[in-house]
Image 1: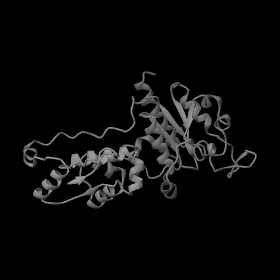
Image 2 (image 1 turned 120 degrees about the horizontal axis):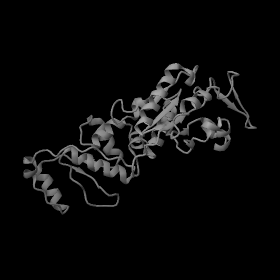
Image 3 (image 1 turned 90 degrees about the horizontal axis):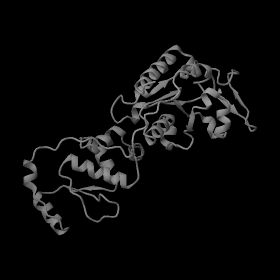
Image 4 (image 1 turned 45 degrees about the vertical axis):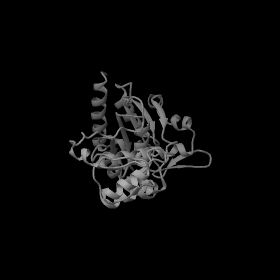
Length: 291
């Protein structure tokens, strides 16, 4: 018997008589804490996949189950049905144990996403600068001047992206470059060719990663996934040379791989394989939209 409040201020416990019921209690408690799956899993030190499976009524490792319950302030009581009946009676709840066991299992229902509203099907590119649109790491001095440690040209590969996108006017761009930490968005966009700058609709600067993700190098991956989830984007592709640990943020194994082009920083998008992948994505998502 798992005793839990499905509402943050409710004093009435909930009874979990199946994995499905337990998952519903866990999800309700997580949502009441205003945590999405990514943040909750990180806070509890369990994988997103395990937390998602638990909320969907599937089994996970016992140790991970107790981690989730403990961090959400839930407790599990194991006792005989006779004792449980007495406890529940004292709490004002009446339970008929037996008819439920004769019922056929209820059909599995996937966990609904936390974000509400329709999906956003606008083709969206997440674009980094260093190791993506040029080779090398950038340095921004106190006057806002930008140089590369390679001595190369800033955004030297940007014209390649201009040419790729030219037949597809509906494609929008979200900038993931670290330049936005030091410079206003308008200044960052001014370095882009006008054909790219006018496609920019946002940056990920306001989306932050937990310290643990920064420590293990998965912060950029987390930020992109978080932004895409918050905007309910379904047709997006991230171009970056430092997106690591993609599998850590997948609810279903392999579901995010197609959304990332992990670039060789010595070539960026000038790598023919990267150009082919971007072109393939553009054809697929824009053809579906009738372009």
